[in-house]
Image 1 (tube, rainbow, N blue to C red):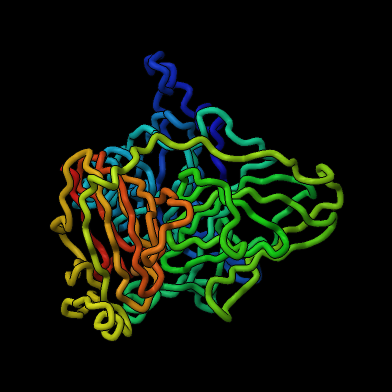
Image 2: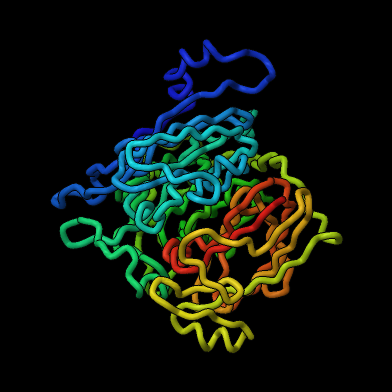
Length: 465
Ligand SMILES: [Cu+2]
């Protein structure tokens, strides 16, 4: 997989840098080109053949873009697909016109056309990019990549900074992607779950580590529907950032790192195993459907006797703190889906008419396609609390564009860390409160990141006027 290092990124645009004005402290725009097009890649080892996919730059995942906080990012999308597309920069707080939502923030990019995205990387963290056009098919076919914004000054002393892009694929016996991206069963149940998991676009079986090593592991869930719940056996990962935003370093509950679709976690993984040993990493989110993602494979030679004993918090990003006293409070309820009638009745909600392509409802309305009216209009600078009720039998990772929010509570109990996120995983029947400052003007999507749910009604819009 080509990893675009910052050095290579800048070197490849030396001519552009020479013309850019100096000064102001802000790095000049460095440009990268992302061509979205069909390609054939090896997702499954021999003796299977390669798998036809759609991807950026001929690889799955697409090139990892690395910039530094405060840099100006410029990416030209070149549409080599036979259908419209866009790029959404998931988790980035950027100007509305750069958010990549067709017919909401920009016209769709037609086949053969290009579109230049340009914005400042205001927050450091682990982010990703993907289309927002027919996303339940385009993302499932392989269109996604990671954008890492490094801290302005190196904030951590780690031996390695590693990205694992987690995905699952629904494959035929011939290692071809199964079609039926919009089949009604997937849309109304858990979404398009796959039968083949990959890490960085392949299934390597093992990940080489050295005893005593300290790794910053950036986990990114790019799957359409699968929730990953990674367990590292006798290792004790420490979460230091969630959805790119620094969090008080802590061990995840039960040692399991849970990532709904769209979500990220930066963890410190200390290699505490024995020389020559192996530690399986298990994805254990779905009961009785655990599988081994890969093994940590220990080298015979230790790097050092034990991982260093030193603190590893990250500096916070410049996020505005919501004023909870003066906040506007908005209640919203999600209903629908298979077995939804009973749960909806139990929780006092209402469902709209279920129809072809509409299975999910935000406050009783389903919005499968077309322009949306905002569910909420906020004054710029206003603090807002959204109290969400998941009156369904399914998990939903709810994603807000253009902002990060604090998770305030779950089922009436204060959230332990009030963490900042851009996507919050709601359990069935759960109530979750989030809070944010509406400081970014424009129309912003607020939707489920199970992409089949989004396409069949679980989508709404918040306007910041
Ligand atoms: Cu959902």
